[in-house]
Image (cartoon, rainbow, N blue to C red):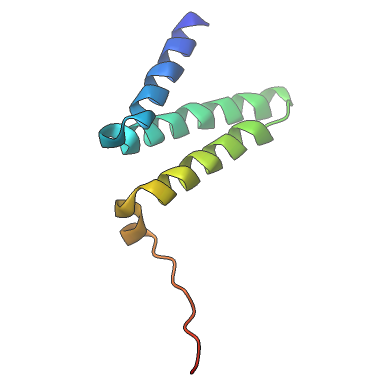
Amino acid sequence: MHTLGVIEITCTVLYLIPRTSMLGAVLLTGYLGSATATHVRIGDAWIIPVLLGVLLWLSLFLREPRLHQLLPIRRSQRAT
């Protein structure tokens, strides 16, 4: 349990540092993916790790301009 906690804290710290936020997000996605698989396997509620992963990437998308180039969201133009 201590090892898993250290891994999760390390990934979170990497996510919080702006220069390493992409690496931290990828590592946390893997961590949360394995947590989701474990919850599904034992029949437990798996929605929490999935929501955390979605919020993780949404917050990274909102603060990281490099992701806007990968996934551009276009606004509809009004007819004048």
